[in-house]
Image (tube, rainbow, N blue to C red; front, side, top):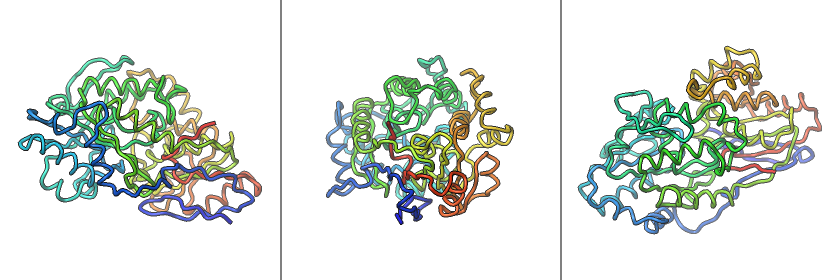
Length: 425
């Protein structure tokens, strides 16, 4: 019997799979990447040796209004480490700079005070100026132009009025933007709802290039790069983390060159070969990414990439924050089948994109070909079944259900952390 640790909430749960059924365990090498250096040393070295850019302390000289875009409560960016280093670097070049930390909520809800304390720490929350980006607050937004896709580019006014715009984040595989990090801090991070909707339209999400680990030819990425350029994003500081959310590498400097270097590093670690199985088991990487069903769709796409057609997907995700999007949830309770959802979405033009449509589209794509069992003991099971999935309280219960569907001899591939891998052929 194989025992595999699966990230769940703020810890791990054990998955037991019989050796006769287990086909493969697909893991990012990042989870076993060993470094003798501590996290601060790794991060500081990146800041001191920026890629295709002067040091941040040089860029900060003579700048009055400096804005740092940081990730929100749904992203495991280790800001307690990275933000103090950024602030130190800025103030060593410009002690009197007016610094605002802009929380890139994208299309998510606003980050609460408690979540800020948990993510940034008391020192930053009580002594720095933090502002939640609100994609629906028209007074805080400004019209910037038109995206390559034809959508309107509307961005946060604070970001656009900054003398120096910086972004911190982390780089991991992303299920339709190719990778997180870099340009994504601007779009969707500090973009208006209108802009996010245009960028996440049905046509783009359906593109064969809008997939994990793909940047070239990806129409969503192309819009994001344009938005970062239009915002004059001058410097990025992106980290790569392991399964314990610890920094194993960092990349700072030019918004394009530093991000590309980071993506190359992640690709080398995260690429795994698909092992098509009757049952594919995964997670959404644990807290904070597994707080809701909306986010959990990301992990499902890793299992989708290694499950046989008509296979069963099992995903462990706490979903303690519920569905994660009312429009997302309503789409499933208002439609009888995944196919009917897909048919409706594919008829929606870019300018009529509805909130959370992209997540509904991807979940529907998965459900058309697979039964999905969501494992959680932290949210209402009815919410799960309302969204056309099966519910289980434990991985053991879910695996029993899957074998009842696919047979006792069904093969099993496990992707312990679905958001950390690029599953390819």
